[in-house]
View 1 (cartoon, rainbow, N blue to C red):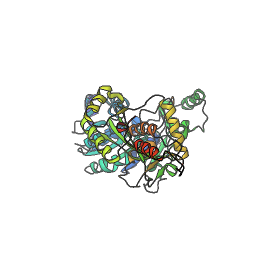
View 2 (view 1 turned 135 degrees about the vertical axis):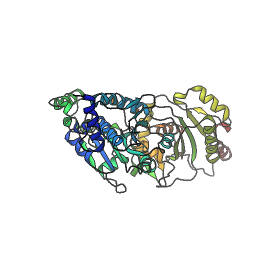
View 3 (view 1 turned 30 degrees about the vertical axis):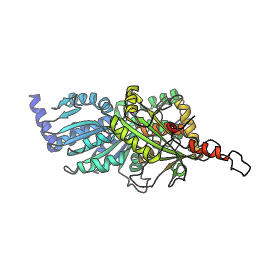
View 4 (view 1 turned 180 degrees about the horizontal axis):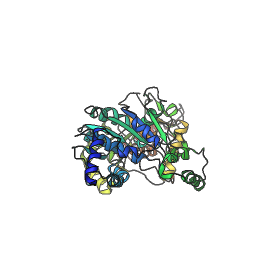
Length: 463
């Protein structure tokens, strides 16, 4: 028997849909139910080792095979994480089913004989979104969906129009996060009245045939190792794929009902802070403008991020903020860009810059949380899609700790949160307000001059 000829007949029958594809037959029952749903948008909640990656591969290859000339898109937070998660599995997938496809590791793409492409990419920063607008997609799968801070924009503004040519589908796949918030949570639970619920499927490693006969023993061992019970939120999220809000795992104790305001008081003293982000997740520059009243609270007036900025454009942005707010302090964190970058920025910006204080970050996060819990840190919002603080709000609600709970999880964007923290440390709202002046005060004129000087930007103050 000519094995190659038989395989060619099988592949042609699979392409035409005359027989069930081998990779589809390899899915376990719950995966097949999700796969066979013809909905153009669906959500997959799966605990660790539940088989998310193989399902994604089967769906990507099936869509590319059935739609010649299309692009099947796989999105993770970064190109690096996309390669880490999927590339080795793609190689095994090709060998397992003897598939005729060309893998280009440097381009993170796979080409099929029918002209279709499977493309791997990262997409948690603004400039990468624009690069995704061109192709016509037969499917778009977003993995690690709970970690995306800009998911709604990515789906509604970028991907949905690009799926129109092939009437393609979009899948959100991932493990639930500690925050019951964000677009992934909304579409998979239906608990946000403004966002329709998507068809949603859930399973865990006990449904994965690879763990047949040993899944429960594995889970029991994990419970014992970590000191968890079956009701522990982290266990239910990470291993059972269930949404459970867990404040202890959230970095910032932010609550919209307590920390959002629709206006700001008069007479604020302003601070500007900048995070020159160079993290694995995204390379974006975040700007934060905070105002404070002594004896009252700190108010985040504006916090946003921009991708692809240069020293010149950052300097221009700072000039504009100085002109508008006349801040008493400007603090900048260079992140992974180095001190030389800050020196160059200082040379280009008229107003002096100060290095952001980064010592004891965890302690200051806890102090910031104290202000959040008591309502002494307020985020000013206008309640619309282009809100001045929408980037910050989307980060605050979902940023969580890593597994060791020693630092924020690197899978989550946090540049706005860092800029907020640096600026908040410069605010003096915790000081006691000055006592009202009386007619007996002999130093009224001196005190008035001192107060006026205090309100000046720090580089204009005299000793």
